[in-house]
Length: 304
Image (cartoon, rainbow, N blue to C red):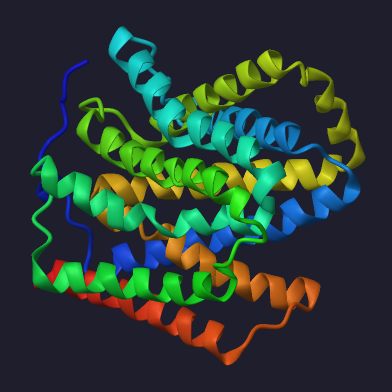
């Protein structure tokens, strides 16, 4: 598979376009958290929930592409792209997530999703895809500092025996960062974000389906009948956020797009408070402000 993408610096969005798309993408992503919690309360199995949002979301994107006259390419290059992006961005992270979650719990398992921006920046710099500079590095550091403020409130493990599982969980952001780099480096020339989003999401669903078959959990699909409306809404939101995610990546590069996780964290905190009445300390809200400052610093650096 060869790299056919133009240099990342060639794709610079309008001065306000990137930050608006970043906030919108992270906001939609964050809105999916309460839906997942409601589905869990309804008895939907986690793997079935993941499969439905990827496969049905992929079908939605495929339908959108066909309606717009954009056929999803199925050349050898594109199929390799779908398989690689789906594996790194969806298949492997979800496989590890559902392996460690029974041991660490949902909260501790999700903590590692604050790390992809730092790892993406390191990978991009090592591959000479990005030249971060002092100001952009400061913005990324601010975002990470805000996430660390949140993590620090629940950083102590219930048992020392869980450290091995936590180390395994740290592979999740590594694969997510690698996926960010992979999609930019191997983006097939002339391909639209919509077509690639459809192919990648369907491939991700395929990897999850293989995981379910391997674990003998295919029967979990029936649990979706406990919350069909929630599953439909989740699939639609997932399709929307991933399409925006891919457009943002094409426009602004892998390091910038990796900050979606920071915005989604803040959005998730807000949705938890509004939907489920969860309360947070002033420290948590200060962390959210720090995250927002990091996003603004990085965006400002892109304009200078």
